Image 1 (cartoon, protein in one colour):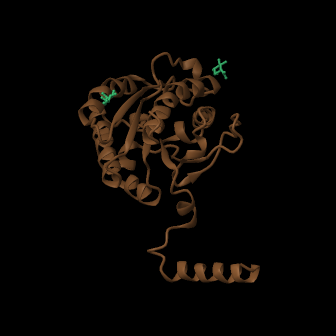
Image 2 (cartoon, protein in one colour):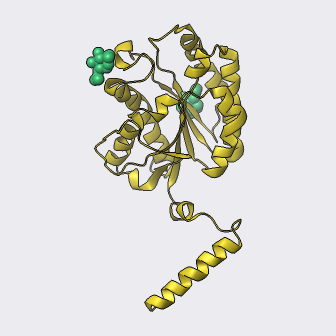
Image 3 (spheres, rainbow, N blue to C red):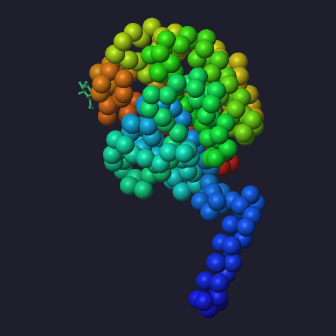
Length: 242
Ligand SMILES: *[C@@H]1O[C@H](CO)[C@@H](O)[C@H](O)[C@H]1NC(C)=O
Ligand SMILES: *[C@@H]1O[C@H](CO)[C@@H](O)[C@H](O)[C@H]1NC(C)=O
């Protein structure tokens, strides 16, 4: 095709997209439709930290990075993380200061409509604990989130993190939440939509925190070492490599 013909075709296509936006997928989604969609979901421990980047390095080392993408409404690298893989995918659904109960009640449905996911990995509850929410309220929010994920994609594979410890304030709420998560996860586990536990708490010391709440370089490595291998398993299963 001549260049001018190509241009005309492109213009015609753009016109079509504008005329019927409902039928035509956004360009970004269409181009990456073959890739497995992984949503890192959480609060500031997901947003302003580097473990997402370190997990991407694990995907790259396993030669899986070109077959996956991180998804979410956010696309940022606030900590200026510099993993080995320079072109790591910076999409995520980490929201500093946000509570699990609010995300469950008001946001997750819309986020998954915008960027559906095959795999969701989440750590949430720290801000709920800060604001005095009970373990029961947080666990109810977890249940609601899983139901939303499965309504969006019945085959969602889920990784739920045990929450990292705090040195700021009382950690009894975190301890109680972490104690409740395993039985909760088991109760909602299914073959079609498995839930696995990433223990980001055991062996995580308060000296792995930079400010009493957020992981420093050492804490990021711990989280990545607990979440990454589980994610790689899910990715290999999903791609039929296992
Ligand atoms: C869910 O089931 C899978 C497969 O049997 C298992 O590997 C996983 O540990 C279970 N998850 C929980 C939280 O028990
Ligand atoms: C993590 O932060 C703690 C407390 O500030 C510090 O003692 C430790 O050396 C830091 N480790 C790394 C790898 O940054």
